[in-house]
Image 1 (cartoon, rainbow, N blue to C red):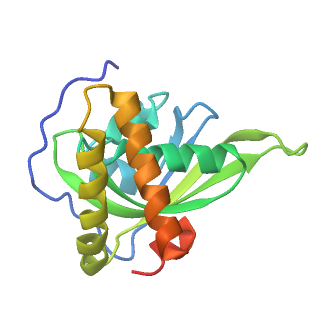
Image 2: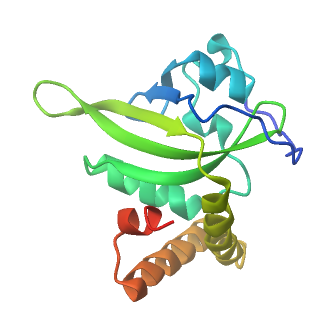
Length: 174
């Protein structure tokens, strides 16, 4: 399936606090499993998602620098919790608190990644959105997307250093 341009609608795609969105990917981030909640909230069929890059649900207002942190962390065989703004097939959005972990074979090699996502408290989103807006502004300060992402990543690392907290401590401070 070719990725096509979708314009954000500004409408939230709802899901319940008791629901968990689940997906699995191969080591390169291509989807190998999704649950029914993922499909319903993202407005995709299982068939449309299988084999696609997980970035198919990336919202344009989600800082790429946070995804850099995510990939750096999970590729180093560690787990990560992060607030993520996703976009459904029709342009609707949904916030999640994602817990992303690597999956290993018997020899300890990474064979993929597993993510469970829950609905975050709206007050948490209000707080994280302020930070994400700062990161997005930094990313967009230059036309070179890679340089912008790296600058925003360094901004995030500087914030954490100034606060004397790890990223995980930062996420759970909300």
